[in-house]
Image 1 (cartoon, rainbow, N blue to C red):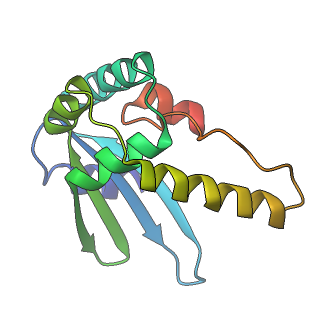
Image 2 (image 1 turned 60 degrees about the horizontal axis):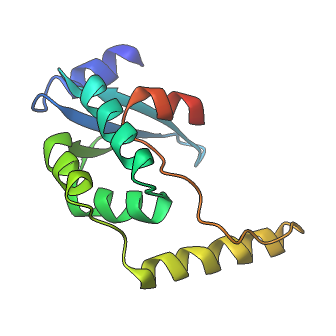
Amino acid sequence: MRAVVDGIADGFEPETFLWLTFRRPDGGASIRYAWTGGGQPLGDHIDRLAVAAGCDAADWLHIAERHQQTTARGRVEIWAYALRPMLADVQSGARGPQERRESLARVLATAAEIMGQRPRTLIPRWLGFGPALLQRND
């Protein structure tokens, strides 16, 4: 799988983060992350700035959606994120809209209720675009 990931990454510009979803015939999927040249340190830098600014998952979703490029190669769905524009968003203080924040909170509360758990009142933390945070999520 590493060779496939590397081959896909070779087709993208430097400083790009790739979220790769490998669809299996049984309906399952596995996710892999990859970065093109310079992407890992830039992704970690973005994450440090976002966390220091108090950004959360709603902000991550907002910024990610603004810059996501979606393609597919066979059973692999590729979400590519050019990191420089995302850095600019974080540096300029871009945040997810209140409507999105409230919607995310409702979804999380409903999921907790379905699972028999106490509903969360806080939006989860920033998810990450660099390996330091993303590998911590694994």
